[in-house]
Length: 206
Image (cartoon, rainbow, N blue to C red; front, side):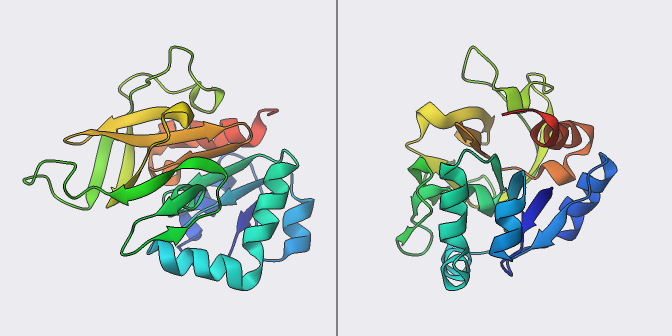
């Protein structure tokens, strides 16, 4: 069973439709028992880091995610969901994250040139800093484009970075640490490239 974590943050419809398009039958749930039964988990999210992490804590899902990650269950965070995997975020304050990947989330403002628009919205090419391509992105070619919507990005996480995107500066686009993975972009909105990433996550033995 593949589960999409529902904690009241984000539009889950497009992700579920994409998973159905690759032959999966995702269960959207905030029930800890079902999440523990799942073979792998998706952690989506849009909006503010503070609100998202607060809702995870209020529901106890933060602890469920940590426990399942410690058991080796594959987890894929998407957009804000990826940012929640880090130790902390500096989005309008300082907020503790799930701590599954070392690093922090910081504003793009002051990092990218002043004439670049924030948020970073639209298609952008992926680049691979590591010589050996991470299996999650095994179907992706250098320069393939995916769809981004974000104003903050992950930093101080070089060992976990498996893809970057250039937007006035080199920004973290995807990360992985063992069974815990994340995409800053939206694979469910990234055409065939994104569908292949979702398929790899769902079908590969991690």
